[in-house]
Image (cartoon, rainbow over all chains, first blue to last red; front, side, top):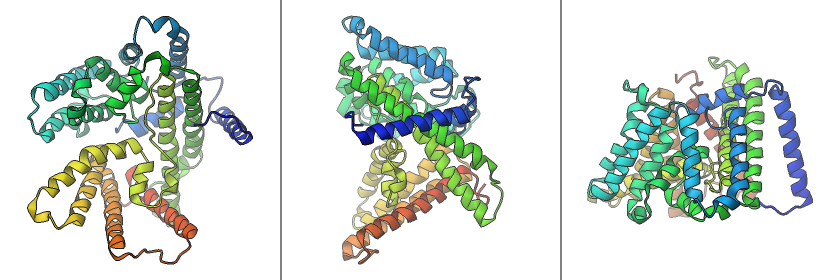
Length: 49
Length: 380
């Protein structure tokens, strides 16, 4: 990944962080501080490996 | 606590990474980075990873037999040696009443051991148990890869504490942010609001298509996200794990697909399964003038094995076989295309041919992954 700062890169990472923050707040209960629901997917997908 | 599965893991490794960077000035003259990483991986495996006793017994078995095969039993046939290393995995995978010795991630450790053994002639002089165990148990890639190579891993750790710098920290953090977005936002959203609402038993074409696309997109988000997280944490700890996904939906043919999807597995299968099979077939005098047959047989066998490795259920085997058929058909097309200097796209504009190939390959890949999922109603 490039580490130089350009307007396009700044915009890209602003969008990524906004989507990440909004998505985590929307999909995971911040007061529960747990990602157990998502952790089940790890078990589901990877235990076969 | 499986890697990357819950908030505790992230907090634990936040502390580990902060401690590594804070103490590197003091530590660099007293202990090597390689030994430190081994200590971290061992501590995590023993204290937090499920079934630590089983892993330690397995590790002892792999260390003993890898050493014997590399240094004492040099003349043993490579196939027998590889089967010896893969024996515990085979017993666990095929459920031969040995579940008590099983643990999550057994395949990935086995793949790494087989790589060390088969590349033994190149790295015998560089082999030592500290690096070998650290390579096998490296926490970010312990459960589900990416499947690293011993000499590459060792070349990183040998560079020492200088690997831990601001650039590595930033690159690692970027991978982790992308991984979190894929796995815990996109993957979870697709799973919760699309995939889980579908009826997998429905045979209506629309429902089957929805199942096919939803599962494929979910699997990509979840698995690519996991791989980005592993690569990110590895970078922060000074190890540059290989890439595992590279925009697989832009693939134009089946062979390119495995250079973009689960790349480290595709590379491993190519180097340690496809090539030996092709070499064995090439040594048969009767097949000397049958290059296409040899290539297609090796391709199909490789993908069939990959399907069987996931499990002996019909949907896994069928999915592997289907990927094998895709690759063999494409290989045959390429062979004749080169021979007769003719292309299926003829005078079609390049951009149109590229996007049409991508569209077709997307459908084919999604269909094979749909079968893999076990949700395809005609193949249980």
